Length: 298
Image 1 (tube, rainbow, N blue to C red):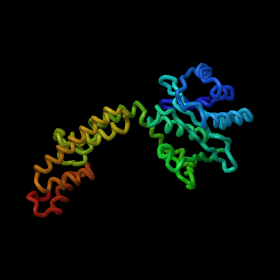
Image 2: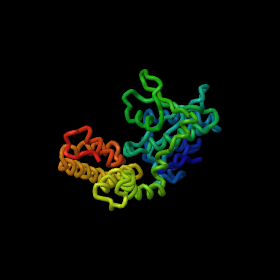
Image 3: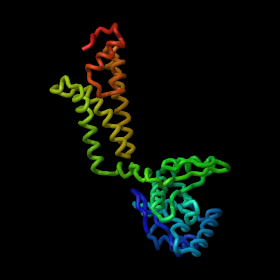
Image 4: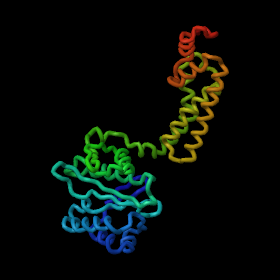
């Protein structure tokens, strides 16, 4: 059984593999064709795994609820972390999830990706209605992971407790990661970024449809189109470039607005709030807000 995400294969260890993890990591690496670089098998963590090995051996039919799951990076078969459900569903139909990463793999989104996928898998299993998790009061990184995965805080004492609810409404939520990775939508977003915003602005004015799109329209096209690019693409260089371009766009808009006199900044503000409002409406609004303006209403 394997759960696949964009970058990971999430594999539950059977009893034999779990024992190898405790006693012979090189043999386990050979068995799974992977390279283990997750949490060091020592101290308190090693004791936890040994305890789970005993429980798993006593209930092998439900090993996927007792054993640990490896988070294997697809690109190079490196084990970046592990997670487990700790036990079978309790009388409240809930299972508890725990997780950990190797230090070098933190802050890269791997655990969010894994926890989200494992929770979705768990909610499809018989007898499971909720997934719960516990974090330290100062475990901010772990808390952010749970929040991004849809958990809500339900209790606070010496630690914090969180719950992921498997309501019908939850299952109907859009998987944003899947949406972002859709190649067709990426292509459409680029087309929209280049063409559609300017056309929408010009179409809604209804007064000069035959005119060639002017530079001002293209500035807005780039501004709103770049938002789409940031949503669909994860490349940091591309996003940085978009931020720089937008900064220049805003500076140009402010410059041209200030050159147009006192009414131009107000017009710019209105168009930033509602960019597709017809020019006639904007001009009238500006005139009535600033009756001393040299430009009468259209």
